Image 1 (tube, rainbow over the protein chains, first blue to last red):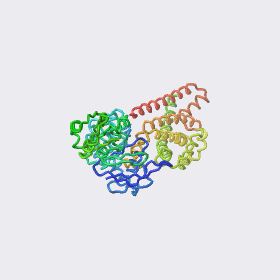
Image 2 (image 1 turned 120 degrees about the horizontal axis):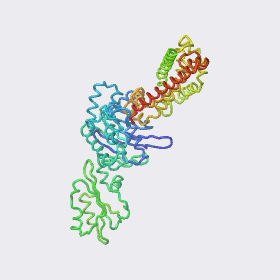
Image 3 (image 1 turned 180 degrees about the horizontal axis):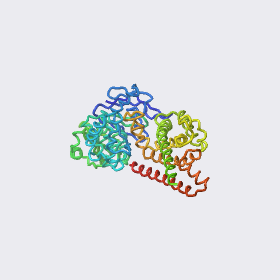
Image 4 (image 1 turned 90 degrees about the horizontal axis):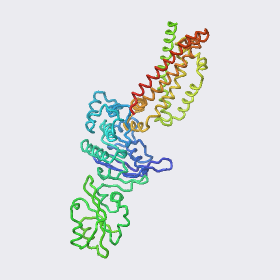
Length: 322
Length: 213
């Protein structure tokens, strides 16, 4: 549904986006994770050409947007919804007027607008706020209004620019759940950028990691998490003292996915291999395509872990010793 | 005296009302042009912006009494005479339009620039953005600017009296000043103050009601 090819964008001497390729199939949620200044916001803005790339093509639903003229681009943009970190609602208009704005801009008759606004507010869970003004709403409610507005003209694609970054953790989860629900009900394709790892692990099917304008890692979230040494994995399973606990002589890191999650792996190590392991760290992430966990163990000094490591590797666990 | 005061008040209202209307009609588009072509706008045209800006600044810096006399030919061309309330409307509007246009520009600059991007992302055209996003969002600021402008026009209108524009200013000069009739002087000042108070109150009140930030 979205296909970016060889996108490069410079601002003066700074290369904000450096030769990025990225594609999101229809109905998928893809997350771009990166620190602020990594260029992810610029990258997102190239999708609806709010930023025109210096090089590369932007394809949405099979159409190369970079070749469209002004009017065709305006029409194409109405098929791509966008939500922002700070909502960007009209303060002096009611919720209903805000949601109706894209319809008004594209000349939808008033009676149709009213019906559509009601549907949309129902969809985002704010059916009773039509006549309220945004300043009376909480952050989460404002983002719901912004989402309803973004969906007003019935887009297939939703772009999310740090949509949850200004929200508290519980509200963040509510908004993410809403996005998942909208994907299921409307078949939306969602491209989101965020600096919050939890956003990616919670709702994204696939993810890219962006550093200094370039995509350094990309793939299905569960695969990235399960790959020992991946950037997403090391961020997700970060230890404050990783260097210390992973002593190559005594440390053992086991990554398990899918069916292996329920297995008594520690008991096996103790009973079968006689290793009196102690757990130094463990974490589990539930992604849209299954669970990925990582377990860090310390072995007693002087024991030989090799048979256990081989057994783990042949049974589908990811193992790392150093 | 009452009869003269009523007549002069009506003339003043007529002058101020008409010039305010023209100022609104011309000042908003001019202010939008200044905003759109300027640094914060969505249709940056630095040369256009500077030319229009300079014209506006010249218009604003000319003292009203001088302006009024200087544009006499224009006034004659537009209304056929240079005397009377109808004629006074021309210099009043010419003086107020650039003043109001600057206030329109600054009210538009006060709107969150992120809204321009949001409108862009919805596929809004330029006119749609102005009409459905920028102007509604700037409305309280526009109204405050318009109130200030109407108050200024009221002040100028008293000067217009001096060249035969009629109205309260004219009355004050001819009866209050030249004929030493203090009663007229006091009455006109009271009426002008009352007029300004009413305009300011209505403007502030409405702007506050419209402002939902």
